Image (cartoon, rainbow, N blue to C red; front, side, top):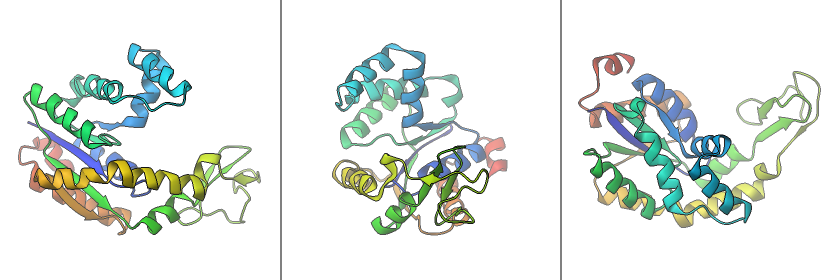
Length: 229
């Protein structure tokens, strides 16, 4: 039967890090919406061409294109025993489409884990990222600070913040999240699928809580996955 999981949380909640670790433990794919877009754009697929046309005009990519990418991905053989969705669904309309898609496949979500953090914590995490202009090394003022502020440890290059990583840009991202994605929490709570996890704990403690949620929700894990957990 496998385990089909959605991870929810605002930008900066740590979904990507937690999804990678959990996917490795379970032996199921981590399906990140951003990776799907890059894959289809790079390969020049029909869905990629459709998405590019909207993106080049500065328009939002329609739900049907995004859903098409997700549908194609979870239909691959490596998702037969489950998957972890990260960055999808983003809206209630996408969640409803996902439900219909899985129902058509004779499956359903097992659990939706909401990694909860306060907005000020998320902003501090997001706005602390700095990149070396010379070698591309990445630092974070909270988690991986350089030995000397503004200077790359590896090559001595100047550290800078990309335009999409400034505090103003991240505040806009959080505003969009509150408007579009936060309603998913209530949607999945009403569906009886939502479990909240304190995302302000250490990475290890958040992962431990996630794994406990999975063990509780997915009683049909394979023996190999159970051993990983």
